[in-house]
Length: 347
Figure 1 (cartoon, rainbow, N blue to C red):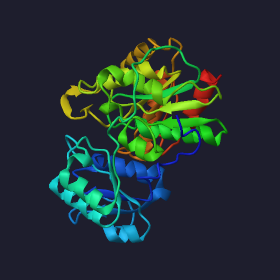
Figure 2: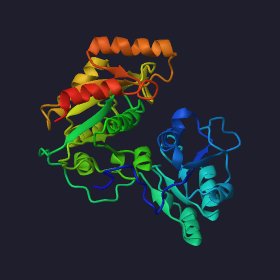
Figure 3: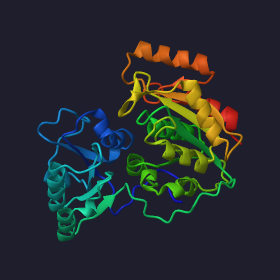
Figure 4: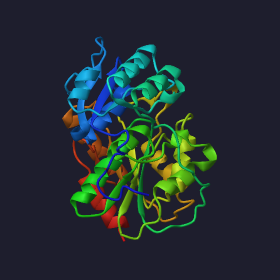
């Protein structure tokens, strides 16, 4: 597995990027674009928005030809909708990007190459199409055999609560302390940020734990693999992928991620969010199948919808209740969580 140092994006489709927003329904719809802009701002030339789009990443608004002239190499489709399909407007914009000389990368369930017009335009212009939501390497069945190395997995009370941001923040904090650490991407946004990874929601269910073993192989350098979690054990739609990652990661440490203003599971108003302690204990119990020594080392709170004073109060209350450091990785950092990680688990 490559990517043992700073993240390096593949050169055939990689940055610099024009981030495509289109006309998204809400903030969650552009989480891919926002994640790339936040963690790899040096890779982002600008954004492309439909005239009706009211959301922004704070990047220059550029047309396809303008972006190419400004140095963009790839248009990254950074938006998603229910079902992960391309709207007719998106297809037209992808064709325009290809004709302007840009490669196109996307993380939708609907593949770029499965659209005949897009495929023809790419061939006509000699451009590259990259579908991140596709498992292209050979993935073995998971074995559960103990392998050397230190691993942390982020888990959540729900989908889209900050598991990727937390893993990346912990990677950055560990590196600042001089520790070896590598983010391991399991979703399309993480793959765009890291330049490598396996989209586990595109992996056949029997091979999910094997995919986790593959992206976090044995290591003997004392460093950490920070594995991006997916879904939630308590989400009826996505618990399967969460369980597979827990088993295949063999995590030494778990960080529980939570969004405190959310009242129900994403997309399922009839399912309330689980109790934090019950959720944490369920994840620890599942993880013990392949690593009986696993420990919970912190709680990462997404407080973006709370005033600052309420955010700090929420973190203090959860920390007191669970006996673990609790921080918002974006607004507060993860230093207390990392200190506890190193105190509890480092070799």
